[in-house]
Image (cartoon, rainbow, N blue to C red; front, side):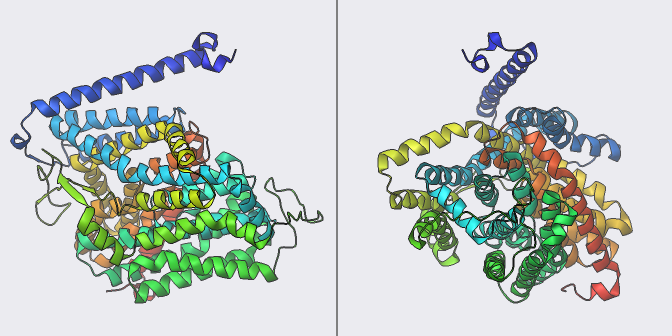
Length: 592
């Protein structure tokens, strides 16, 4: 008998954990029923509420309460090592209590915000993760993934260079085409196929997914920042790229150092340098002269081409395996795959890249949006809450409109690509349907987790907990350029999205910048640039990484691995922004 499936034969600690999990999930279910009953019982038009950012009368105490949901969520995963869905439910409960009991948010509005956030978690976020993992499962089922793995070892047998090519260069391309969790899900799976350990693949992929995030997802983060600040897209893109250029070069070095150590990193410095410089230079030139929608895509594509070409003429003195053993003298295994077989192995991912790229083109997405997208206001929440100065210039009613762009959503494009790739791989409709529902079942806990985490994030936004945290940083005076960058980091870490962070804090950044006499363009861009460093510790990103690597329940280990890297990179970004704000030589680089 398998004791793992029989609670009566498990150790006391395991039975206690299982009982706690069931009790927690039962509580969440009952709370959901109570919330639905309350929502229908209350008149939606009877509630209007104005945010308050210091409800306790002590700004320090209010800030501590505002930070509590995030601290509880991350602490439950990293310190107490709870599974992600358990940590998410505890964090969500904490957010509801903080919002209603301390910040005096009406319960109906709090539950409405939670429901809105949960809906956004399912669509579009889960709707991206699900078809990506579905496509991966199809390639494994048909044996194409093994051939893909072997074709990559044909480019280089060195694990450091494989990591650079896949996690940094290829991951940047997927970030540029679709954003959200696509690069983490795809690249982590590829790394595992090359022999990387699941937790190692998850952590390293998250670490690599930094440089392209500010322009990722067809430029949506910058477009959103432009919308809330009124600053031109070109100045924002150019300034954001200026802040990120040092990190475009630094991050690939940091990535290999984290994986193999300093001396092993130095051995492949030419390849790392050429990758970082290519990415940074292309990103900056694109940002200075073009629309932000193609910046990350072009920079990543250029990096892939340059790196693969460079590796045809250069290889390191030593070749290291995934476990960092010297395999230089070993004869490289030749698998004998023909060009046609290698093309077939890459075909599903080529189909994915092409479909997602076409899906996001403004000419096509605008036409589909006009004919298929359904938008509806969240009853009782839309414009029922006012965000007030100093977070915004004038009192502003918060909109709550669910954008159900079922056809233009990136996930729909990925699903179409997966189905098309499945047919091209010789799978019939029945096999595809069975594989799809198997994938849904396998990620069921991920769906619950992301829904709960986004519900927490939306309560934070509509209650004003985020604004309280932002205002705490804004009180730092002349040090604001440094701490303002950390606002972007905190925003992305708490919401899981650089776009959401820009929407939440873009206005606060520009208002505070004018008050202390620094460039509003710089501080708005600092929010986007600082935010990319927070993406790797964002709870949704960590959950996607654990799901893609089949290590669900190990989110705490992943979070502990990436947290220091995230904080250190955010602090360095703050130093760069401070130099751009106050040192004349660097300030001349900022767009005005």
